[in-house]
Length: 312
Image 1 (cartoon, rainbow, N blue to C red):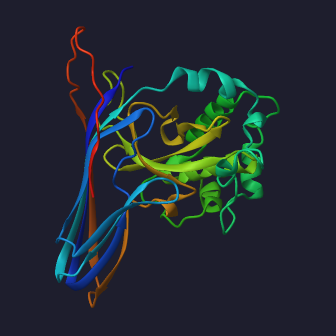
Image 2: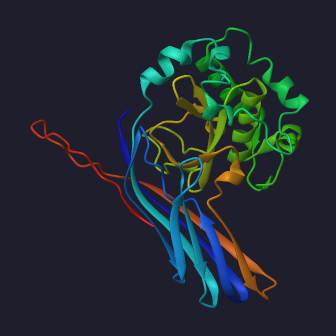
Image 3: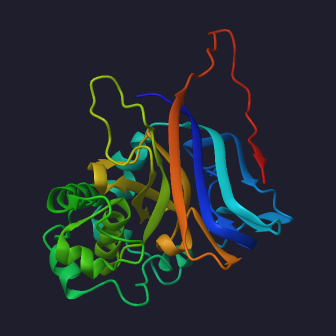
């Protein structure tokens, strides 16, 4: 596999039955620049034009945008657009070092891995239940290589849980998903995270997108044309192995990473407050992750550094 480039467009439109006098919002729609992913351009446009807006960085290093629309409106549209290069998985990350060591060695220590320790802690209300511990037990056998544990957990969730759109909401608890054995990508990521944390490993929730154009001969991936979510487990040395239980695979060049946190509530694509007398509203979301041709570089040429252009 090779590096892939994508043009990502994420558009959210709200329609209100009555006028909205003011709207406050916060969004996570700008992809992260990180090892294996380069953001060539990214911007968020808001209609009506906000009277105030700012771009900042949250505690996890994600780019977040705040905005305040003061113009009275019946319709609000927020669009994130970006051009991103994504590399294949680094073979050394999954084939050497901590990845092939016993999974117990990946537990963060209290003294040297303070940042990772935060991702071991359970949520409130707690998500680590007896059902989670029981489900995880056959996977986390003593001395098993970490990458083998991750692969087994990914496959097991994919096999045991049914993908059913609309079966859950963002507020659905892991305990409910465990009981019903159905959900969507965010639910499966949260089940995996709870299993990892139940065994003392640091795990984070990752939001992003999947490419809409599958490789030749491959079936269309579940979750395309929508926001997607997956999980990642910390390995000693400060790296993370990301995996996608919804599609039973490690995260690779078909995944575009936007933000991460301890749970969905840390990184929702868009959240806000409105002031209105309207008793009804509708929301529509459109996501397109389109392959974009990479420039051709001759053998005589050497590609220079590329700087991302981020528009707040």
